[in-house]
Amino acid sequence: MSIKSDEIADFFRQLSLLVKSNLPLPESLSNIADNTGKNEFRRIIEDIARHVANGSKFSDAVKEHAFYFSEYQIKMIETGERTGSLSEVLKEIATTTQVNNRIANIFRSAAFYPLFIISFALALVLIMSYFIVSEFKQIFDDLLQGEPLPQITQYSINISKFIIENPATAVALVLCVPVFGIWLLGPSVSARKLLMAFIKIMPFSKEVFNNLIMARFCMTWATLLDRKISDADCFRMLAESIGDNSLKKTFYKVSEAIENGADTAEELKNTGAVSHLIPMIIQHADESELPEELRSLAELFWGKASAGSKKFEVAWQAVLIVVISVFVGAVVMSLFLPLTKIIQKLG
Image (tube, rainbow, N blue to C red; front, side, top):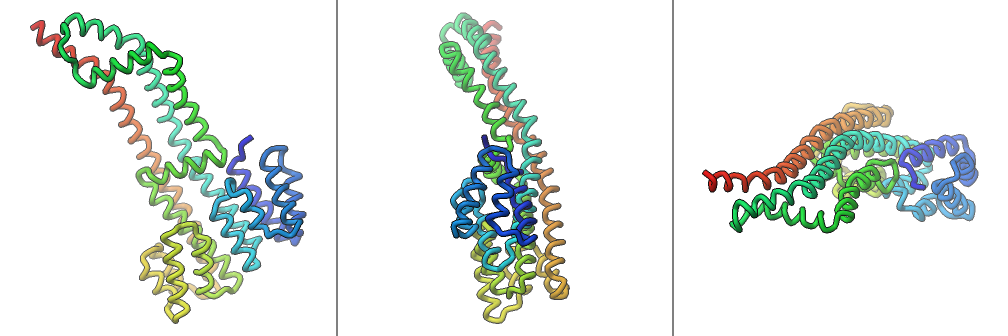
């Protein structure tokens, strides 16, 4: 049974509450496992609890199941262990995971209709190739008397020949598309990873992911500031946990610059790697209010990510509609191009 992304978010949320109530970590993990259904995720939690009870660090135990937990989640747990803010970090991970899942669900909804249309178009092409294209080939052979066919028509005839000679294979190949699509749009962790990787190359997705990263940055920084950690140490820890290679290098440089006396707001502004709102907030917010201001900014960035995903939905559907139109149109054109030759010949 596959593990759902929402299960992981719920796991971190429950664990955050139990750790906050001062229940020992091994007992907290065992309690969550006992209240998790008899599935693969329960066995994973039990294994993590066993490792922690035997003296392993929580982050090391989670690393043993890195397929199900992202690098960002593992790095954040390590940060929480180092700073003594594990409960707050776990709550942040749960919130971030839930938001990521919500955005992934928007993408899934956006992809469902185009997936249905693609499956229908492939089935239509399969039927046309099996029943119609071969008949057209006979007509072309009789009327054109061996004259060469347009290249696109020859491709269609070759595909039709393959389908007629291998009907079971052709049907299986066509069915692979909806089957794979249904799995990809499902709730499992492996499907979500692949879906998110694909989404990152689609139009307007960069805006969505940039806002998600800024939200993570603000929430993590706020958590570290609550622990009275210096800005230089904060950015060193942020570099280790942010999960973005370009920002990782930037935050290491910011940390070094702050240690050498640079102003945090000015340094962030000069990098150009973070939203202009962040240095503005740093410059105008009181030090005691900064963590709460950063959390408010995180909410803003999460909202912008959700709004950006709607642009992605429109772009996704437009791209797929164009692809489908070209695909089906090519088949139709391949059948009608030779007809112009036939008309010219008869005329």
